[in-house]
Image (cartoon, rainbow, N blue to C red; front, top):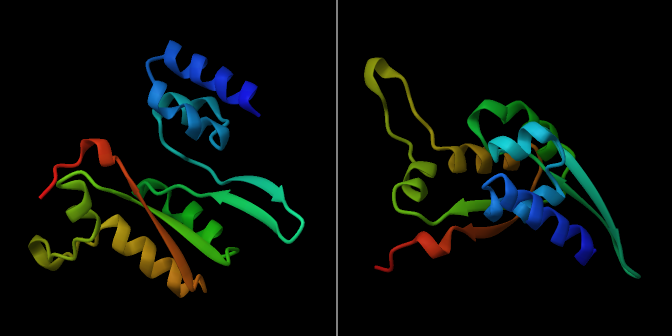
Length: 136
């Protein structure tokens, strides 16, 4: 599939989204590609001699939590992508109380809680944006 990846790299570069080229393997909708955000659930199937695997790409953005719930509800294992950049990482795990008694829960924390509640008992954690992280 190198030809497909090369095509996506070229197309993404043409619209100033070169770093999103590999995401386009799953994000096939034009609005997802333009915005750089997964909106709907996408699936790809892989078969080996020992396993049949369905990769399900569910959105992580707060506006699309219902789609994430749908995806997690049919999953055995999850891959949680966590941003390593300062501020984004911390806000993803935030559990601070807001004004007026409202409670803010970070997206990462919320997704872990939802996935576990929906029966996903194994999570693989992938760290994203390592190139932008500052070492301690």
